[in-house]
Length: 532
Image (cartoon, rainbow, N blue to C red; front, side):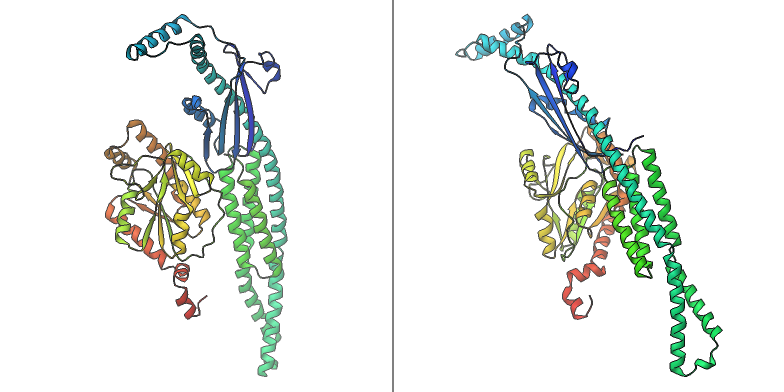
C-alpha cells in the first residue's frame, strides 16, 4: 500500500448538454459535447494538517451541496487541510430550454397573485419568462455537474497525493539511512572514551602521589585497580548501548511503516518524537567531542525527518501561520479545553472570581450569544464576513471551525497582557490548545474530563440549548476531543464542581512557583541573588 502525502492539487471540469456529463480529464468524452454547453470547474488544494480540515469556497447556488461535498471528501481523505472551489461557467450562447406547460401554469398563477395585491405591477415579458424557465431548469443540472466535477477532482487529488507520498517515502528512507550511519559511528566512541578516562585516572593518581611524596609506597597494581574501578563507574554513567538499541528499533519500525504504507502519519509522528528522546539522552551522556557532534547531527537529521514525516496522511484543526513565540515575557498563559457540556465556562468564571491576577482572553466567534452572554465579555460576537477579514489580515494566532461556527484567538489578546506581566486564561477547544502549545511552548494546557459519557449526555440534555441531532454531534465530537487529553499537561475530572475548581486553582498557583516562571516574573529578585 502506498504512503500518501497531505499535499496535492487537482482540477476537473464537468460539462453538460441536456443533462449529459463529461470531465476535462477525459478529452475524448469532453470532445463530444457542444462547446457552448454550461460547465462547472472544481479545484482542490491540499496542504499539511494533523486532522482533516475541509474549507469551501462556493457560490451561493452551491451552498446546499456542502453536506454532500463534505461527505464525499471525508470518505476519501483522513488528514490534510483541503480547500474546494467551485466555479460555474454559464455561456451566453447556451441553448434555451423549451418552456414546459407546468412551468408556464405555475408562473401564470404566481403573476396573478402578485397583481391581485399590486394591481399596478407590470406583467412579465417573453424574455423574462424564458429566463425564469432557463434558471429553473439549470439548477438541478448544475448540482449534478458540480458533484461530478468534484468526484473527478477527488480522484485527481488522491493520485497527486500518492505521487508526492512516494517522493516523501524516498526522502524518509534516506534520512533513516543517515541516522543508522550516525548510530554506527557513535557505538565505538564510548569504549574509546572509557579507555582514555582510565589512562587519565592513572596519570592523576600518580601526580597526586608524587605531590604528597607517597609515590613509592603505593604499588602500580593498586593504582591500576583503582583506575579500573573508577573507569567502570564512569562507563556505567556514559553507556549508551541501550539508547542506540532503542534508536535502531525505532528506525526499523519507521522503515516497516514506509513499506506497509497506508495511514502511517500519526505513527511516524510518535516514532520521530522517540528518536528525539534517544538523541537527547545520547547528548546528555556524551563524554567526548566526537560523541557530542554525533548526537547533535542525529538531532539535525531527526528534525529533517520530522519535517518530511509531517506530510504523510493517515475533527477540524486550527490554522495558523505564526512562528513559535519566544517565552521571555513575564506572564503565564493557561489554555483550558474541554468537550462541550463538561463545565469549562462555569469553572473558568469561578476561577477568575477567585484570582484577581488572572485575565480572560476573549476570543472571537461567529456563533450567536447564548443566554446572558454579552459581546466583549464572554466572546467578541462578529459576523462571518468580519471574521474572514481578520483572517486575511493575519490578526488571529489561531482559528477553527467548530460545530459549523468560526472561533479564533487574536494575537493582541494574548501577547499584550503577558508581555505586561499578566497571567492569561484561554477558554478554548482542544485543537486550539494544542496549536497554542506549539506557538507558546511554556503555555500550560489543562483538559477537563466528564466523569462518564452518560453524565456528559445528561448535562447536554439539561442545558436545553440543542436538539437531538445537535447533541449527537456534540457527543461524537467529544469522543474525538477526549482522545487528545493525553497531550495536555494537566487533566481534571469534573465530577464535583468544588473539587474541580480547587484542582484548577492549585494548577495555576503551582505554575507560578516554578523556577522559570518566577525568574520571568521576578527578574530583579533573581538578579539580586545572583541567580541566572
